[in-house]
Image (cartoon, rainbow, N blue to C red; front, side, top):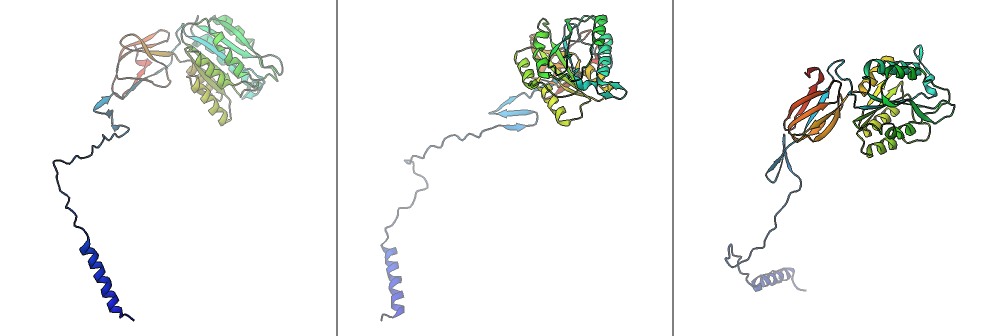
Length: 328
């Protein structure tokens, strides 16, 4: 038997032999004039470096868009101009027979519309009033006031003749499908105000109808007034339809609310023009701001009388709020 210490010593000697026998390596030179270093490509970092008020990319600073909005600023300051077309759609379905306090919903709505044509809308403004059917289970829709210049006396009589019939359904989509035809003879901007107390019940698709109307390239805004609507989900749906139509949703619970809501829905539109006189944006008084590049603009409000802001300066990222109360 080989002693254990001999075996261990033998292993050490063998290892030393390997080390001794290993070939010597040439040291790596720190610098060699003849060595060709590999070429490293340019590293590109996607995105941009954002600094408050600016966006910097490759040394170029871009402007941050500003905005222009207009508020009414007082009563009697925002009557529509007579070249703005108005299409009112009044839901006179059977549900409008329900009581609201001591009156029926339809009677409250008729009173508000009577005051609208008597006291608010200017004589001669292009106006149409569309209503629903007059037979139980009807899904029809027709014009109670034919499109034409507003004749206040005649309009009051035609509104008085409107009634709700028990069982008449709510063809919102069908009524909205007729808006383009109702206002086809009107060249200027157009405002649609749909006053309803409930959802579509005739199988129509009001959202699609509004989208198709907008896609025709018509200068139109669709505002929706929910009258005595208790369903929050339905209110959200109405608000989405109005957004698609470039308008707003207004909620009304009673007679006072309804009058205010319709008046707000009929605020004048305004145009933003650049230095060349080209329209670069359209908005509505009391509505969302119009986004614009920094610069100087002229703003025309289609009110009666017309209001013009000759020079409106918009700074980098600035929102300018104009008030009709301050207009001279």
